[in-house]
Amino acid sequence: MRTETTYRLPSRRNRVTRTGPLVTKQFTSAEDCAAEKEIYDQLAGSGLSPALLQADENRIVTEYADGPLLFNELEAGLRDPDRQSELFDLFFKWSAQFYRRTGLVLGDSSFRNFILRDGHLCGVDFESCRQGVPAEDLAWQAAMLATLRPPFAPERIRCARRFLARAPESIYGEPGEILSFLPKAFRMICDRRKVSLDAQSYRQIESTLEVAACVLAGGRSSRMGTDKRALSYHEASFLDTAQYTVELYFDNYLSLSAEDPMVAPPGFTILRDTVGAAGPIGGISRALHAARQPWILFLPCDMPLLNASLLDELIRHRREDADAFLFSERGELRTFPLLLRAAAAAPVFESALARGDLKLIRVLKTYLRMETIEATDCDAFQKDSLSNINTMEDYERLQNSARRKYFLSTFVTRRT
Image 1: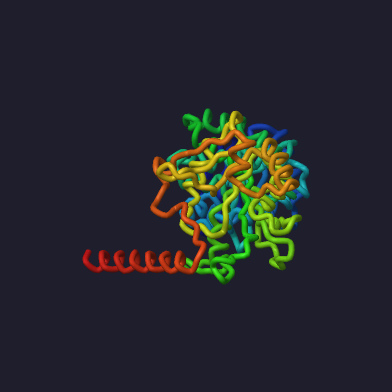
Image 2 (image 1 turned 135 degrees about the horizontal axis):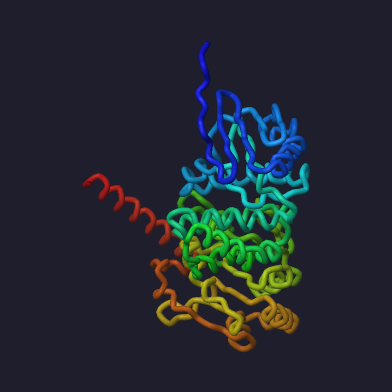
């Protein structure tokens, strides 16, 4: 008769071992054992956890859940946004069911406590569960994602922001509620991991909840002669490119004309102009009144070379003694992208719309405290980053430039 080998499994507080298809958890506290047994009982038959097979005063035995850890899958997909989004959505689906069944939050839990099997997540180790609100969990988990080694690296920051941006409001609440838990979570995680809290990186992560984004797509494309939104660049439409550029914000709006029949893309709320032929002033005014965050970022859908990193550099400058932030390029003012402080800008744009003052730059200069940032001083700036594609000639130049870059890269690859 073959004897099964027993393996020690990681656990901070208790002794956990695996023997064949069984996992045994020996608790140091009978109270903790009873609390975890109760959670397994609440999750019984749900598929959210392994089956509980046996329990006594200080010990529980469960089935062994085989499959890759969520933590390892996230690490493997660190530079794969689509894979990250897929895994986060699985986690949110699991969490919603867990909160509903138990009425508890996960507390000091880890992505290592989740196993991916048969396209679903299975959770283990519920010793940290407690009373609380789900927004606490979300803030804690975002802090963990951002501070893994190397802490606050660009890909870590994007991962944490994507996690926050995709979090369902139906589970975690409004962005302001989530934001209130973020500072404490980051301080505690950094202290535990002996990591210095990088203020600039934290502020960038915070912007996901503190800044809303609005893509202005209600123009008539009269100079282009065709709908600019549908034009293609690098196998994506201009509109898809703009939407992807702002994917790391919790609230995203799409500004359209009143008669536009377009339906809302995933993750976006459509705002339709209430005043016809008002240009960007109308769309901006509508979005300022809709936004829940203190700041809102505006960009048009005809800037396909604008990158998310350059937007981050604009947003990094936000502060309370100014109301409007925009770029200049070699001293020449660029209207978009535009960052506005909602509380100050909303009444200004409402009044401008009411009196028919539709010159955007004049409104900004006259009624708001405006600050410009020289784009060429920014690390993320590239040639034509701030160029609008307004005419078919502009579009042809864009396509020709893309072809030249492709042929050059192909030539270099072949030579090497």
